[in-house]
Image (cartoon, rainbow, N blue to C red; front, side, top):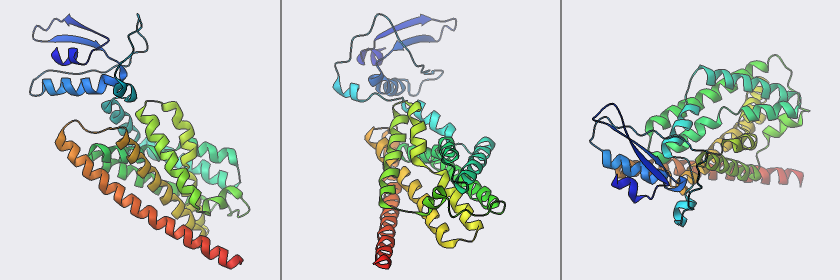
Length: 316
């Protein structure tokens, strides 16, 4: 009770239940204070048996509650850590539906790329099954949740493998169309692609943290993970090794930038585990993954600059 009162709830009620050793307490909280209250209640109930916290969204309540005076709480309007973890874990799970979705979206992307069909390519972007495990990997690092990191990594690897395999098989059915602007553009790696992928990853993580899932549709189009993977499979099947290497570099660049920017956003939004030991593990996992991502990103940027200089010398 003291933990609830300390966080100035909008309203709270105590209900008697048939089980005499239990009490039902219903609390209505401002969004900005929900996470801190949930953590405080968990701390107070640590070591007790038979307790459960159930979190449900509330659309509206009357009379309208007084606005929060705490500026920090106002700035911390985001979904609960547990809610975010549940959503991301579902999206990062490796199951049959994910594999089928990866295969079908690759078919759409590969045919659209080869036929220079913009609408089909955008459709494959919207499906975007690879975005879920990337966000899961970043959130797992931010929370020090190593099982989520492993599961997300397996799911991401499986999704990319399916995309490459399906596109590789399609390359034997369709002659490679080098006149397709959509296809050939996936063999171009430029510095502006780094900024685009970083922005897309940050927007994806921020929209998830704020519970604004509708924004993810636009982020999926901007992230554009499937088209480079489909292009890589098509180029490999056609034995176009130079084009395949550039498409593969673009795919790895997008994945790295998305992971790095999502890590940064989850960190800035202070999405961290509750216990200090878990926080220490999360800090270590975050810095290790961020370090590898930054190192790879610097390597890719160096390669892009070298390739651009090489092309400029040839033209000159």
